[in-house]
Length: 215
Image (tube, rainbow, N blue to C red; front, side, top):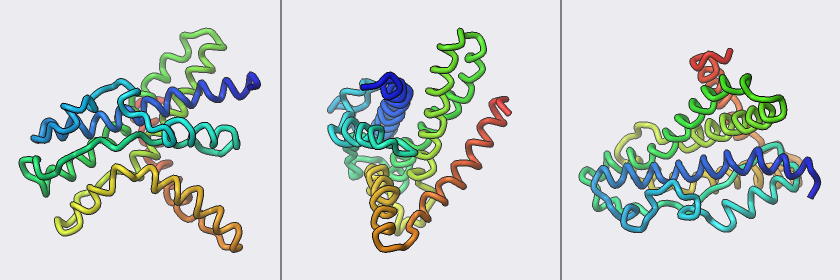
């Protein structure tokens, strides 16, 4: 593996692992607060990456994208098990549990932006490495948060969306990778989702940068 490949791996692996670990732990923690201890007793309410690693989604997929020099890097963890029937107010709480992960990602993005203020105090090489990690963390967490955030929905469809949310990253990967590849074979531009995500993420990133004093 070349030095450049190793450097790229180091500036992506850390943001990906932190993003997916905290995302899944947040789901389990909020479920625990709202009455469902399923994830708690299975040890999934943890910041230990080993508890959440999915062999394909956490290791193979990001590695493949990195080797293919993809313009983005995604990964996902094993979904945290949630028994909606144990929640004190299932219709409301299932949405709160689903929203916990994306909210955590936005919080991580804000922390990454705040940490940019530390870059100037480091030696040049270390400053570059940290800045690249923080930039990737900001982008990755905002994109994840944009796609997976569950809005306040009519009760009739809230449950279905909440149950779908743990697989949001896998679905996103399919739409961002498989659809464009299929479209290229058919001569049709199927990159519409990428454009929508880019617009939404760009607005949020600009807002975070401004609020954290990086503009």
